[in-house]
Length: 111
Image (cartoon, rainbow, N blue to C red; front, side, top):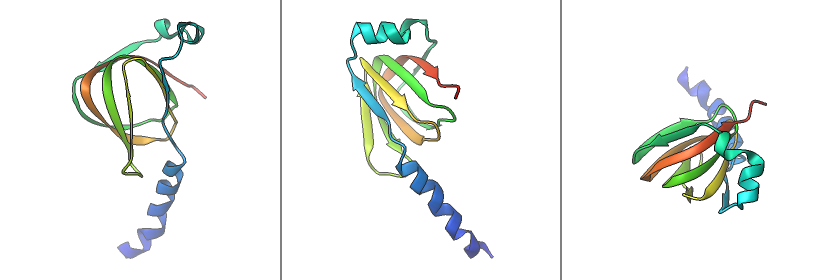
């Protein structure tokens, strides 16, 4: 009875709708210093589409790149790129459409 599975599929989408990516454009050097960005690990990727699921909140600062992030539960996208501080909530599933290669510092929140 596969039709009995319907109710469980709507709940994750409702939960995902409350998860949103926060972008802080061009934060000050003082803010970056306060966060300790330069001590965070670095990660990069080439252009392409990457499905991602965040099991912990990630804060990242893009040194280079341009991304359109499409959340799983929405047709809308969030755009960010070089110079942006981005906070991605725990539990979010999205696809990164990278048009310019990304180079970023990142940190996962352990809580």
